[in-house]
Every structure is written in structure tokens, then in C-alpha cells.
Length: 222
Image 1 (cartoon, rainbow, N blue to C red):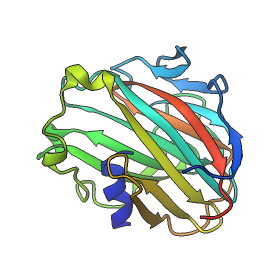
Image 2 (cartoon, rainbow, N blue to C red):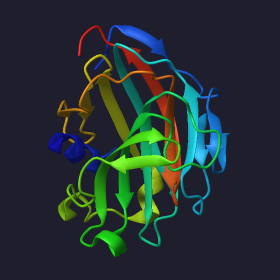
Image 3 (tube, helix red, strand yellow):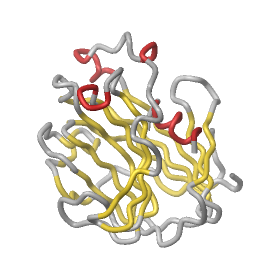
């Protein structure tokens, strides 16, 4: 679990079996100001909390998810977050805290509440649309200040944070690649098989961001 959150703090290979790489027209907005802009899925409201959009995608076996996230607006008040749901059995159709039964990987900025750099990787287990709990101490995994010292909000829109995760739904094992250190990944387990995955989702909280370049594949091995 420790490696899980270390990886999320900096979040969140060519594989043999290609599933799809699409324009993201299959996304459905549940809550927030979502639209397609230049082939990217954009959530443009900096006020919407619990904003999320989902896509129907049956999940099983071993799957790999790759996409990137770009900052659009928000963060000037030193508050905002984004995340990625996997293994959703029944996606929420409106504003909701959780998202059916699923796992959420979450990156949050909130120095007023948490202190320090205020940037933390967190992981949640959602058991219903209204019930979702963190699976560790909120302040357990902090992004070190030295990783943040050169960040300039005025230039954030020029940078795409690359996300790459491989999940074994049969065992609950997960690998997430570090977007900074080449060929380095973090490995952890969610505690058992992930069943009933019919949807994936992206979400933001008080942050405008865009998601693009989705590539979903089925590797032959974990």
C-alpha cells in the first residue's frame, strides 16, 4: 500500500494486444462542465466539486490504461484535485461522492487543510455512490517539496502529466509508471480481485483540466 500512494503522489511499453485508441466520444458527463475540445475531454468549471465523466468499458483479466492530463484553470486558491476510477460496477449518473463499487486514485492540493506542500496522493474504495472511504491516513503520502519548487501555474497548461497503469483484475495487483523516472513503476495490491468492472471514469474537484490520448490495451502478462 505504501508504494501505491507514493506513486499517486507523482500522479495519479508497447503491449501486444491493442484494444482501442479513440476520440473519447464515448464519454458521458455525470456532473460538471464537460465538453470535447480539440479531441480532448475537458472539464472547464473551477467551481464544480465532485465533477466526473464515465465511459462504459467492461474490464477483466490484465488491462493497461494510458492517458495524459493537462491543467486548464483553478489552483490559484491553492486547492484542487483530479483522479481516475477503475472497476466501476454501476456508474453514477449525477453529482456523487463515490461511484458505485470502484477504486479511485486521487491527487489533491490543499495546503490550508493538510499543511506542508499540501499535495498528497490518496486512494479510496467506493462501495456506493454516496459511500467512499480513504484506505489510509489522509496525510500519509505527501509529494516532497523538492518535486514542486519549480511549478509555475502560469505555465502549467503547457505540460501534460502522463498516466500509465497496468491492472490485474484477477488478483488486484496494480502497476503505475512514474512519469518522471524512465521505466520505473510502483507496484501494489488493492487487496483482492476487482470484479464487476463495467465502467471507468475521470473526475476533478474545483479544478479545470483536460484528459486526452487515451490508449487502452490488454497485455499478455502482468
